[in-house]
Length: 118
Image (tube, rainbow, N blue to C red; front, side, top):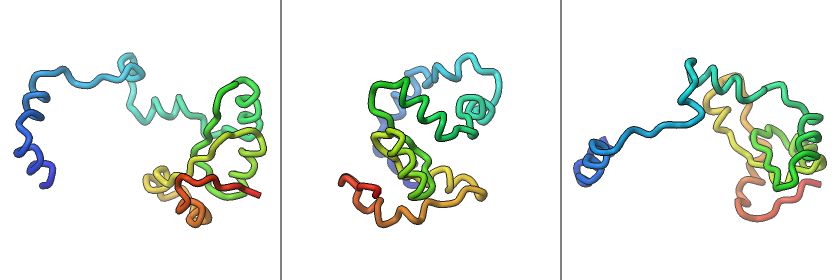
């Protein structure tokens, strides 16, 4: 309901919607399957710490690792050269099989501060 209220108060949104072409994503423009199938091909769930070590050796810029589920894994990726670890439970919210990174709760409250992992 809130979206409809916002749209009623912003007629320019309607004009924009009706006069501009829809958004297109380059990665989807030639893909014939579903988005789930594409994501399954793009992201390998079997990635290991050895793969991260290889990537670190190949990539000279900042390396950020997302999807870490516990403190021990965070320590491992930092030891292997990750410049940052992103704590997120987006995947956990979308999957009943995925555990939530609860052990990170005290760390995540320090949003912009540097948190060392001893």
